[in-house]
Length: 392
Image (cartoon, rainbow, N blue to C red; front, side, top):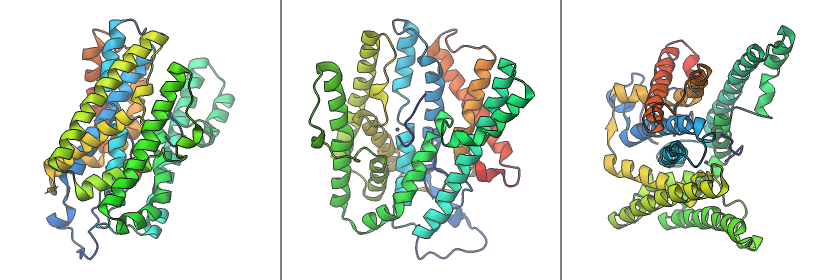
């Protein structure tokens, strides 16, 4: 599924952010770290660990469904079932970015500009290069076998794999580009979050929601349905950015929401899901082709659903920390699950299997669990190899 390079699985590979590489806990400013990790020092915020797992599975679920969603005739029961499954699995990316913002932008955690740019950003770039090359080599070999290419041509394709980094990277790796961009601007955003009031942060999020999500969505629909274009300067160029998700994660984590605000958010999320599902189905039938406009990351509906999921876990588990190795070990593998799971989906279709039999409402969720489980198992084993955990 195509995604814009810096557009709306995965996953930050940074310490105390949306995804961890090495799983180390960074103590808050002023804390004393002992050389021998104690139970206290290794404890992590429970809501974030659980959210990583839920969001990662959601991304795998979404990719499982959309692997066939685009190819099914829209006037069939199979498409209706797949569209329903697709509609409930679009919040994963937004949640991951909110988790990242909760930790990377919080004054509680000592992320200096030097650390962010020289450590966190560099790690993301290394991940990007390594996995673009891995998928490029795998695809080159598969293409050579499938099309009967000669050894020389296959070798050329393998050697050209790094060029995919600038031309055509694997579609699911778009997220790493987005995270890299967020880390570039994180030092500036931290200056803002460290000094801005609660209401000022909320004000910026409101600008993002109105001018980055609502107005572009309304303008697109008016152009498509009524052939009417709003005056271009009504909007704010650059307001459509994942920085809005980033700040939202920080805001909810730092300040929380009151009971009335939570009820409004949860109700809005439910209404948003219905709107997305209904109108995606409707326009798919009208245009006779799958329509995912209402599922996009930069739709207000998707944002509200992601914010509601994040808020629910943050409110439910509060400041609770956990040292449960089962939860922590699974959570540490979520980056690898995101990076690796498309391999298992490719293998599934390479075996000429189908998600449509006996019925997608049964097969798609079942195979999503299988792909997630296989990816988790493979990542867990690979991480036992010294050095490999740095790219998983």
